[in-house]
Amino acid sequence: LVVVALFVYCRLASRSSEVPNVTVLVLGDVGRSPRMQYHALSLAKHGCNVSLVGYPGAQPMDAVLKHPRIRLWHVSPLAVPGSLPFTVRAVLKVLSLLWQLFTTLVFRTPRPHVVLVQNPPAIPSLLLARVASRMQGASLVIDFHNFGYSLLALKLGNRHPLVKAHLAYERVFGGLADDAFCVTEQMKAFLADTWNVRATALHDRPASIFRPTPLPEQHDLFCRLRQDGTLKVLDEWWPADDNGGSLGLFTQRSSSGECSNAPGRPRLVISSTSWTPDEDFNQLLDALPSLDANLAKAGIRAVVLVTGKGDLKRAFEHRAALMASELKAVRVSTLWLSFADYAGLLGSADLGLSLH
Image (cartoon, rainbow, N blue to C red; front, side):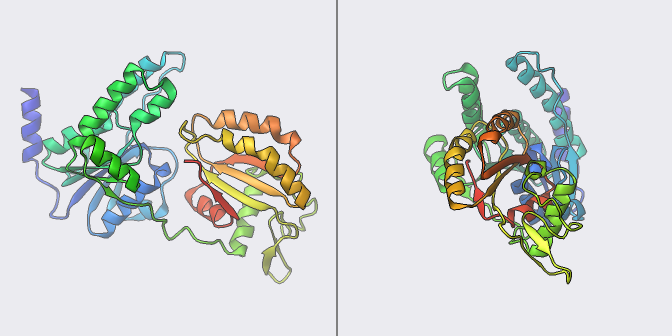
């Protein structure tokens, strides 16, 4: 009776306006989900009211925060003691998220015309998105970034019962979507051939904030990152006398205010990662000794900066620290920046590196 009553309530509840309402669900840190933020901005630009649901954490883009048609709704994963077995922790987190997502999608956010959900993670977001959209007479659209079962297999192995169960769950609920997007043509073909899901490949397009960074902006950015300790790994390379901040490792500013590249500016290599097992940054560390030898022979220096947060970050930092004394022409560091500073740093790079 309770379920029937909820269903009737959701069906009869009027939508707040004639303007289309879209719920965009990302079961992760909204600020670290640029693709879903782009979806929200695009929908709002085309006249939709957008409820952007996800975890709190990093600050989203200013355009998202300031847009009058976009409202953020936060759910938070349950903090579970790390001493508990993985399976127990996973079950507790899923149960907590089930309740939070149900109440948020069905009661807190405006009744939607469309629910757009990111996959992965698939559990429990695909289930709740399907239930909420069906109860409220909305269409369900899934944006496939990857496959949750394959990521789980990297941790547990392909034959683990949880991996097989995850595959079955993801395949069933993926097939229940009213429409779907994906990130590559190869994934589109896989979904059609294996899961019978007809998806449209939507390749990522950078926002206008991503552009080559002018030298004056580079100078201000590098000075600020050095002052706040973000670039501490470069202390021994930084000019001892920086002339009050006018002379840096990468840029310099003349007395007239004109900025230029600093003499002997190191090459800047930037990579971004979520520190998940599908991105093997040990490959990068394995290549550093050879790169270092070649650069030293050529009289060139390089700085490798890896941005992002995730479970495997600490292991990378530990191994990089052990290698540091053996590297003469290369310095490696991890960092976490605001979206604006990340865009500025990327626009200052000589090389971008993707291991996805």
